[in-house]
Amino acid sequence: MLDGAFTTLRIHWRVILTATFMIALVTETISVVIQGLFLDDTRLRSLRDDPNPSVREILHSASGSFTALGVTLLVTMIATVLATGTIALVAGRAVVGRPLKGRELWRDARPRLPQLIGLTVLIAVILCAVIALCALPGVLVALAGSADGGASLATLGLLGGSVISVWLWVQWTLAAPALSLEKQGIVAALKRSAKLVSGTWWRVLGVQLVGILLAFLISAVVEAPFGLIAAGVADDGGTSMFGSSGNPSWTYLIVNGVGQVLASALTLPISAGVTALLYMDQRIRRESLDVDLVRAAAAEPVSDKVA
Image (cartoon, one colour):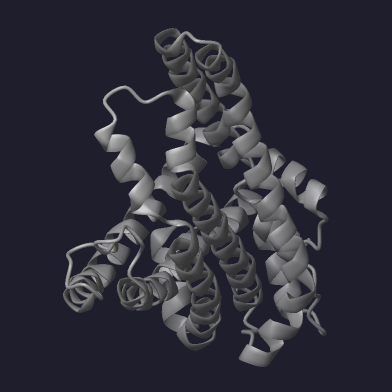
């Protein structure tokens, strides 16, 4: 699967990297702005100075960080899903010997972008709701006055909710290619993904984890020099994104953001390409998609729907 992702990138590098760079530029710019607006180390410093903070004080102090983290994760998910849907279109045409050009890719992908974003938001809301509901009893117990018992119960709830969320994420991991290539609706794409993953959950999880790990390693290597440069040119000459006032350094965020854009542009084709090819692999195994592709390659004109 990884070899297929790299092969697709090598053959169609121009259109893929152009698309992923544009996606990365928009999403990472949003992430930088969100971090600059919501991150504030002052609250966290005051929390560290309090030996016995209450649950309310902890939630209040960490609210900005939680907001920035949540929005950044959502933006990252949207970037990945958009890249997956886009690369799925490239791969779907490439396997029948009719590669997409840049304008053709934009023409085919544009009508699906709102649904891909909606798909991402829906999945994120469901996963967060599952984790929140599992942790809610512990939070309520803590707010009622039993901090230790509530913390223990909330921790167990978070663990249980995380397990359920991972299971759901794998079940729906092929929804973006299904939405793009089969012209499915959002709910239909989720059901389609669950059907394709059924019986091969562990295999799909393993392939995705390998792709994520490789993308993480490449991203770390690309971002590291920019992090060092950002620390050196930060507004107060500090070694982190926060200045002496506790507010984030925009210089640090922008320089580091440039590295994140480049890293995302290079790693999105890998993670998204693995998902797109995994979708095709599952269809070949279950539905003899390879036979349909041979027929499609000989047909004129090529269909807009891989079905």
